[in-house]
Amino acid sequence: MKKVLVAGGSGYLGRHVAKEFKQRGYFVRVLVRNPDKIKEKGEHGEPIIYDLVDEVVTGDATQPETLKGICDNIDIVFSSLGMTRPDFKHSSFDVDYRGNRSILDLALAGKVKKFIYISVFNAEKMLDIENIQAHEQFAGELRKSGLGYTIVRPTGYFSDMVQFLNLANMGIMPVVGDGDKRSNPIHAADLAKVCVDAADSDTTDIDAGGPDVFTYREVGELAARIAGKNPLFLAIPLWIGEGLLAVSRFINRDIADIISFALAVSKLDSVAPKYGTHRLEDYFKENL
Image (cartoon, rainbow, N blue to C red; front, side, top):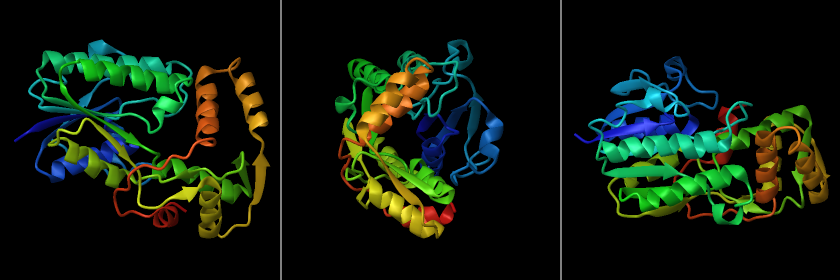
């Protein structure tokens, strides 16, 4: 039986990946900071995995001393470890780069055969953003490590789209720029299948999106229809967003990263090869 370590096991994608690996007959060890978190469903419908997986290890990737032994007797490491919201204590480099680097060092010492890592679609077009820099610096070191690897680059998660439902319920739907850039976000269960398939593949880089392509305005309109609301669509010129970004850089680097990323994706089409069967419309209905 092959053994896998899932780092970021309490997150939106990590839980689905742990479940998918287990369903395919792997021994699954998950790394989490708070084991109680995976005893309950996640805020976006993530499955309970505490009693599903074989081993739960408590550790904090920003504290390497807590990670001792996590890669012992492990064949494959999967990591979706990354900063998902500001914590006002750690930087993107602390988590997305140094945290994953600590795990990679342990994987190398433990003679792990493969490392599957989650980065960001269109990263090469957004290298002025600190969070993207951290992802890509680690991805570069993974490539040079000598380990077998796959870097998976999703366009965006369905869980990120819930903010459109929240805005619809608030009665206002900001649209940055023209709102005409296209994307095909993907459900974590579909992306999990892509990631687990990669465990037995020689493919080193995979871009992945969901089955449906939307403009950002169309996502807002879909959210409004599902919520049964008629929000005010408020056009926000890019120059206002740039002004907010400039101010945020004096306040908090993590908030600045979020604004910078939002501005970047509002200027880019983010359509990747289509995977999966989950529909955003159904996901919105489940998360009303």
